[in-house]
Image (cartoon, rainbow, N blue to C red):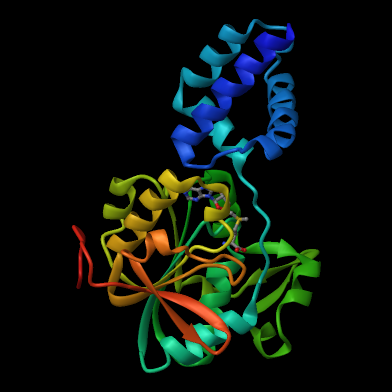
Length: 273
Ligand SMILES: C[S@@+](CC[C@H](N)C(=O)[O-])C[C@H]1O[C@@H](n2cnc3c(N)ncnc32)[C@H](O)[C@@H]1O
């Protein structure tokens, strides 16, 4: 394939990934995308095919579009990631609630929603955690709740009663699994949020929006806002700051050294229950 044909192909697939998922590959991450696309093309035996044929192939069915979604997913996660921040959320903002409903979106293989359920269980709180992601493969793994043995190292001693050995790995115990439901939700699709059919005290969306551009980030934040209860909170990773441009949707609230984002009273088409 000539250089300009290759550039054209990569650009079309980059745009398609953006349109489908909101994830934008900026120029400095293009090398990663190119590498991933090359591997995908090989895996589908499309090596040496003309660009138009490759583009048609990936756009011609939902199943093949999923291959592009898998391609963009950065699945990295772990149990009790930023535990101190989660403690500030549970022991601070949500302290007085006996029943808590949480959404973890961009939950990847499920470690984050299970961590939240373990914390709720330990504190004797009722309620539910919904783990959501655009990628069905990671959701399948999340539903299994089965992890490599080394994952135990991420779980503080006082929570290890919530996992048990299974084969050469570990699995989350049934009482925690029961509190967590996994759903396929695309952050930029309003109807996916509607189909959740419930509202939440907090929505965690950590290490996800860093891959979005300003437009798709706003769409995602508006959707999250719709499923938050009045006064509910958005939780980003502690290294992500929600810039002023979005303060019409969420107001920053500081708990200890952490910022959370409270659903403001501004414009809202969505539920306030
Ligand atoms: C790096 S992981 C973050 C996992 C977890 N939140 C954490 O902080 O450990 C990012 C996840 O976001 C998901 N994701 C990316 N775009 C999405 C979208 N448009 N809608 C829902 N999930 C998305 C990816 O599939 C991936 O599983």
